[in-house]
Length: 263
Length: 339
Image (cartoon, rainbow over all chains, first blue to last red; front, side, top):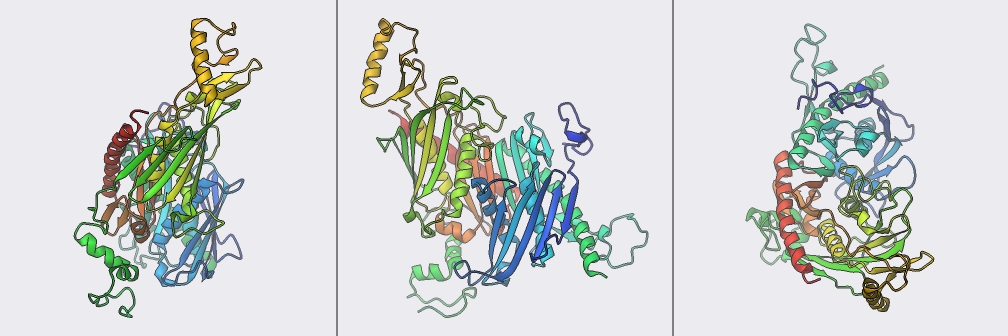
């Protein structure tokens, strides 16, 4: 599926002429809250989630684990009380974070991640996971790997469309949300990049780091009516989307951290 | 007792250490020893799911019921029907109200006063499979026949309609988890589906004032007699359905497709199919696949980040789920025959 090249074809009229494989505008603000150890607000055009990280800090006696840190997640919807879906999402997000945070490094502590959906225009779970990643970086919590998350949907005419908005999600035959771990390869220089002779250390120039997204999935949530092939296509499409999210997150966080700590 | 060394190091274990104690102290080594032989502590090969028993119609006071045992996991589902006035937005659709409860004796993790976390996950996935993906967030908006292509769930709410705009059935589906020994969602979904298929919808009578009520028990036989009389002569002399027995009311809950789930847990390099509670706790991550009769996938949830799932693993899990579906639907048909 040549989603990057294909223009909006018949029946694909996404709002504002977005291409099928085009992500919405990403905005990441770091250190939004004063009292939290780490916080971030992640916006994907109409969807916005605020994440706050408290920890690692002393865990309550009932909840502490003698050998590892305990991750607690609170997922608050935009409006109303938490329903079953929100608590189910808490469980899933907690599972992902437990895989990414080296729990054995902080026995008897707890890491609490609070996610508040500020606006929901589709892809709220992906937004929340990305916000959590940025907030964990802001809090300085060590991570086994960074991760990023992207949603896509299968439209009623069996086409995959990346980063759906709320209308596309409601009309979709199936919804997919994949979370992939990623790391940055600092050893390869981008060919014919902005500057000619890049003799500076690779880490200093952010543009030279290429995002390498893992082949395997950290977490996934797929609901609807879809076939096995469509599932694998969606996974591949989301993986490409995660590359872009990863690159953006690195640029945004690096710039923000440099501005904060550099001077 | 046992060696005092930290759990991670392989302590020298003498023969007189109880197997149970070893399992508690060094769960990873305990399981590795079995998995190295390709079996699990309960004797199953790694890729085999547990034996299933389905008992349909076990509760006589309910309109439909099923007791399902998957290994030691036991789930009881019951359906009770009541007549309601349909919502204006969906005048030809009934409703399905789902509730899931875990009995206090079902697992050692039970704490009074707060439902265990995974109950919400089970409720959410069950309602997703039965009512469609829109149901969890927008209650009641999932109309019976129409609706987004993938949003419609297995239960056809339109089949619960008695008289459009005036009366429809509300099915109260209660799922009780009596023993949570792993794969609670799989057993709960199977029990819910079996209970819905077992449900016998009673006949409906209405009064001259347009009040509909169910003809259960003694009035059911009276309704049946009335039906015969109406067929031959027309007793009340008005249009059929004005008063007396309502013709053409549904007799069974329409199930468009049969969604069934299978959970596999990922432990190191192994994919353990249908794990017990111990295995789930040890592995920490798993893949749950919901499939329907046509081989279409209804849901895939990969939870837990400790082990990553590559494409091959996902394909394996979906194939295992499809095989399980064939096995379970045959069992379901066998248990419901003669009902």
